[in-house]
Image (cartoon, rainbow, N blue to C red; front, side):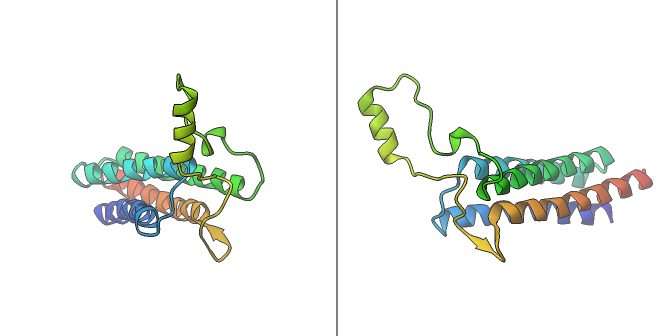
Amino acid sequence: MHRILIGIAAGGSAALLLGALGFQYIGQMAPCDLCYMQRYPHAAAVVIGLVALFLPWALLAYLGAAAALTTAAIGAYHTGVERGWWEGPSTCTSGPVGNLSADQLMEQIMSAPLVRCDEVPWELLDLSMASWNAIASVALALIWIAAGNHARKQG
């Protein structure tokens, strides 16, 4: 049972990650900085899931839950930015300037896609991708926790 739950939870993160990549590369929807930030915990959850399939340690399942809750929190924060509840990070619309000349800076500005964190490129049932990620990730965290509890009872 522990391995089935781990497979479902890690597979769910993999599916969400693949969905995000599909929207980016097939749907031509460039992600913002907050979108990228939501992907890293899913990738970590997939790796944790692969390790947890071979090492039935409850701690690994709880780490998977922490990864899922991390992306859920970022998704909830991103939802608030999209809905105007609070201001998002300034990095959502600009790249690093560094020691660029005026011409290099202008070239960077003109070639970079303008992707704002406070605009919703796609929604379903009045919820954005960030909102759906937050909801799905909380559900995945609950599955991870169930897997950890089951592993702890077995061991």
